[in-house]
Image (cartoon, rainbow, N blue to C red; front, top):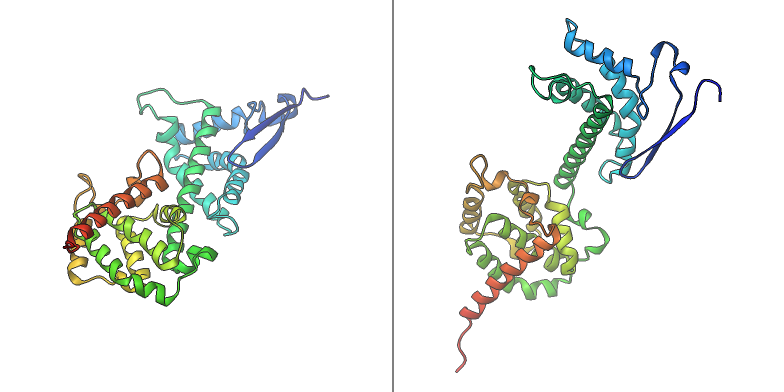
Length: 311
């Protein structure tokens, strides 16, 4: 084939494949040699380094050109593959955020990652991979932000979908007394705030929406995973207003607020920590199941101790 041998590369990502054809330097004329596997040339990369490190004032022109060549299709594909972003038309917003992040971080996050006295990182393949990581993180953050907004703006009936079929009024009335007692035991158990809220969320799904326990475990994870405990509690209170047994007394409210204000670490109180940070290595659903079982054990023990002794 005239003009040099044709190379074909395949880039695998989460759920899509990007094919590209690359010819040798004689086919590129002014732009010179294209680095194999990349969408930009070595000369373009060198121009970007010059503009960012040695030109006064610095310029982001070549950085943005390279980023658009490498990331536009990838960002669109990642958004299409993400359940929270698919069909939301956020691709251009995400791209703009990617460009801004690259302009703010390329110098010290990649080129001078070893410090101003260290060598300049002149690895174009590494730069492409690093840009991909930046884009992936921004897509993830945007999805998380939209998911949080959706949880605040959507009723829990919408979140649970077709499997959330509330039981009859009679069935719920029969359980109100025991559930109120169980709620009080949970709140006064002196357990960590995230365990109290876990049980409240699980009990809401199971006893108010008649969702099987194993599905309720997963739903607690999906609904609350990215929310700080303060927002998780606020959502539970809003939705719990529809379940009589979840109406809290002033004393119960004070106990939960005290638990949320306890320190998780030197920088944060429990209220500020995302729920998902408490998951154990076994995973979210298993963690929820474990915490609910522990709380139920406490409830059973308290109920047994309070039961009258038969003569």
